[in-house]
Length: 358
Image 1 (cartoon, helix red, strand yellow):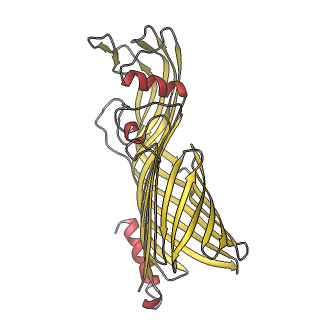
Image 2 (tube, rainbow, N blue to C red):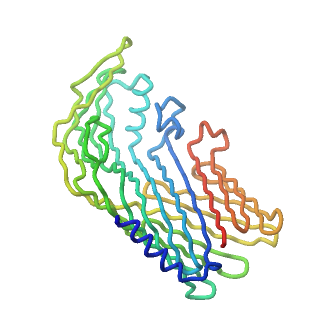
Image 3 (cartoon, rainbow, N blue to C red):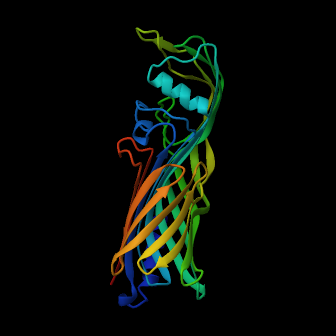
């Protein structure tokens, strides 16, 4: 029996010792994307859009479905994550050449791009405790199977010989992958096994103020067996030109395509919120979330509609995006987007949390 189902079956049997009426099922779905240079739709497409200064991109999704008895719980989890950090010159050169716009002649562009992405699925076991009356903790362990990998760095420089032509100047490549997107080679994808921990805390400071913290991928890693690995220098000898003289470079490798075991450190994701009960009908929010490439800070307000139902409005300061939310006793919905339009959003987020007691 595979590793993940065996652990899931064991934990399910342990939970079945609890009375059936004490179990509660839940589902948690989250998705978030951010692109600084161009809207995210253009970032994953052809970059045909407005361009602005920026040096990072981030995207992740989280799907979790499970049961708990108030103290112990088990869930099936799926996670996808991708991040890029790049120099301003890298974004500008790529944008202008992708859209066949003139570049500055006789200019040296500083190229530096790091990437880290993975996909995984597995089982999450967690335990809730209340060491103090005002403090609740939840600690989880995630047993993972990795399915996709992209991690590495490209750095060096590019020299423009005219406003439509350029040459690579000592562009170094060093990356691991499950799909060769640079040189389009057929490869055997690696297999990965991993482990990650998570921590959630809720502190009731006093009757009017609460603080919550959520950390994911604590000390997380995936060990990939026989991962394809490329290291070397990318050359620009293979060029073609269109009728307007715009160059297209088909990169070639001066180096090695290898296969070796690789340990991928998973990036830490964190969220924090300070909640102030202004009165019985309204609350003030200060939120923050972050990753290795970008942190986001939000301020907002929520008001009671009826009973346990609340509506929330947040404004994220450094991405200039809005979050609309609805919360009830069993459901929590949030949608984040740029105020202009969803089509041109640099930031898009969606979160759905629901639970049901047996």
